[in-house]
Amino acid sequence: MTHHPQMPLRCWAEIDLAALERNLNAIQAALPKPIRYIAVVKADAYGHGMQQTVARLMHAGIDMFAVANISEAATIREIGTGWPILVLSASLEEEEPYLFEYDLIQTISTIDEVQRLDTRGAKLRKKLKVHVKIDTGMGRLGVWHENAIELFEAVRKAEWLVLDGVFTHFSVAERDREFTDLQRERFSKTLESIDWLPKEKLLIHADNSAGIDSFAPDSFYNAVRIGLLQFGISPYPKSLFNRVSTSPIFSFKTRIGVVKTLPKGADISYGRTRTLDRDSVVAVLCAGYGDGVPLIISNRGCALIQGKRCPILGRVTMDQTIVDVTDLEIRPKHGDEACLIGSQDGDEIRLEEFSEWAETISWEILCSITKRVSRVYKTSIATA
Ligand SMILES: *Cc1c(COP(=O)(O)O)cnc(C)c1O
Figure 1: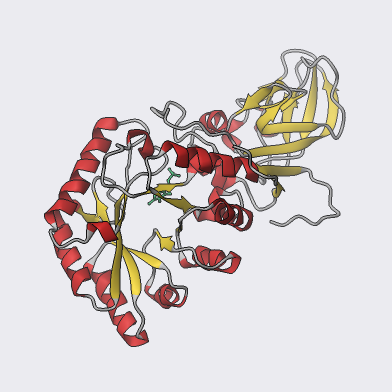
Figure 2 (figure 1 turned 45 degrees about the horizontal axis):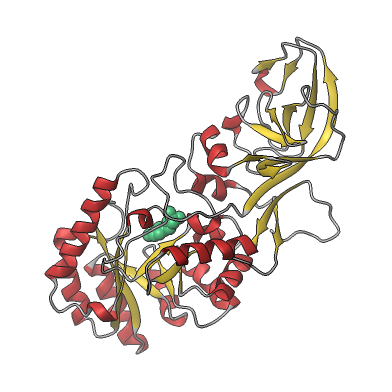
């Protein structure tokens, strides 16, 4: 949501676009060349804001964008022209004309899609690029690897479809090397089984952020599809991940609305889930689950104030969250900044840690920071 310039910020996300570019450079440097970089920017660029993120990635020199649907693709087309855009999800029949209109690349899993799109292409007298997806153990989109030949034949016969790429998707790359290797093997065997495939002309890709940790330099892949890692987040707190080091570009901040003293025995917030066991100083923060602070981190998470961890007391509410500031050396003041995700004066709450408190994954937290939270961009020239 764009922020009205006159309104002061009470809960906001800071996004460092120069760090995004540095992360991109670090990932590209860690990959054997020539590998094409497909930047995954679905879901409003993982909550970072499509407009600014995409513009910076265009500037930084990525090769292709990947999105979930045609609306996201149309947004990219409005920002800049020339970049190929892969639609990762299945498109609905009513959406199909836009694939042709915006010159997008559609992911294909079934013969039914091939026939629908080929018929549409014939009607419009326009060709459409497609990437065939192979299901090697994710069980979502893609043709099951043992049934791929028939689908490839259908694509070959479809006059109005142009085969531009082939890909698969890993389900446990961040923690199961053995299963990931099995997926890689199923993928390469499938490609080998189709002797007419013009491999040198195709984009062949499998690796998401977690995948590139097991990316073999001599493999036949010539592209990667990166989302989370370009935003500086490790795919899993206990990842095998060690090939590239990136830094977080996202912080989530708010301010203190009220500071007050409460006696031992006072109850805090809805549901009376917390009773103070000492005389306390509490701060009421200007952010709650209406901003994306998950209810589940009630009595569990903390916020940084003066660079110190201040535990959340009682339930997170829609607009406000109460934290214990009794142990701070200086009593904080109304209006002081509190950091929910990010670093402040020497301590840091990583998104990965925040996600553990919330018993979820980093991807979901980024998608749950709501529209009410203004995104504030830091831009500067990226120095590697
Ligand atoms: C979201 C997505 C990615 C990016 O995954 P990250 O783990 O965020 O790098 C890659 N491929 C597909 C098919 C996806 O849906």
